[in-house]
Length: 245
Ligand SMILES: Nc1ncnc2c1ncn2[C@@H]1O[C@H](COP(=O)(O)OP(=O)(O)OP(=O)(O)O)[C@@H](O)[C@H]1O
Image 1: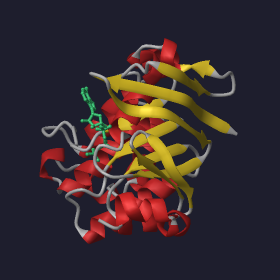
Image 2: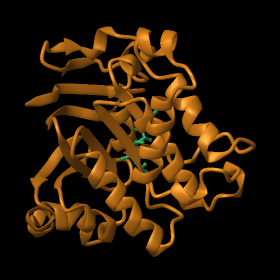
Image 3: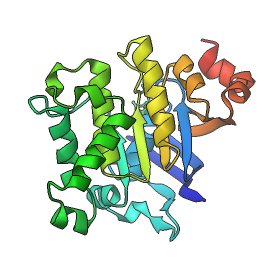
C-alpha cells in the first residue's frame, strides 16, 4: 500500500524554487534511495515530510486515512511514526549502548508506552533484539562514546528503530564510514525496510547499488528519473546532470 504520497509540492526560498512540483509515492514496506546533485532538494524534501519546512503548494498525505502531514506539527508527525536520522550521530556518549537503547524505548511514541514502560523482561528482550538487528550485541555494555563512527550511526538507527517508525528517513549514512561499515549499514537498512518504509538519501553510488532498491533521482526540486539503479543510470538526462560531471 502507499504510505506516503507527495503530490505537486513546491517551495521557494527568497524566490528560488528549491522544490518544484515534486510528486512521488513511497510504499509500505519499501526501501527507497534518493540521489541527485548538490542543491537538488533532497534535504528540503525530508524537511517537508518532517514538518520542518512548509511548502507553498501541494499535498503530502500519509497512511491509510490519507492524513495531511502539512497540517501537523513536527512532534505530531514524529508521533505518527516518522523518524529521521541526521548525518551526524547524536547518541548519549556517557551512557552505555544498552542505556541508550533503553532510553529510546522509554521515549517510545504512543501514550501507553510512555505510561507503562518498566524495566521489564520484555524491555530487555527488545533491547537485545534491536542490538542484534544493528550488530551491536557484543557492545551493549560499552560506553557509546567509545564506539567507532559507524557503530554510533548504527546505535542511532537502533534508537530510531526502538520507536518503531513506519517511515525512517536516513541522511547520507555512508559518509565517514569504512567500506566494512558501509556494507553492514546496507544490511541494517535492508533489514529495517522489510517491515517499514525507509528512505535513504545518499551520494555514494556503490552504497546505493548495494541497497538494491528503487531509486529516485532529484534534480532542481523535481523527479528527474525513477526506477532501478541500472534504469536511472542509463537515463541520458541523469548522465547529463549528475553522473557525467
Ligand atoms: N532555508 C533555506 N533558505 C534559502 N535557501 C535554501 C534553504 N534551504 C535550502 N535552500 C536552497 O535550496 C536548494 C536545495 O537545497 P537542499 O539542501 O534541499 O539540496 P540537497 O539536494 O539536499 O543538496 P546537498 O546534496 O548539497 O545536501 C539549494 O539551492 C539551497 O541552497
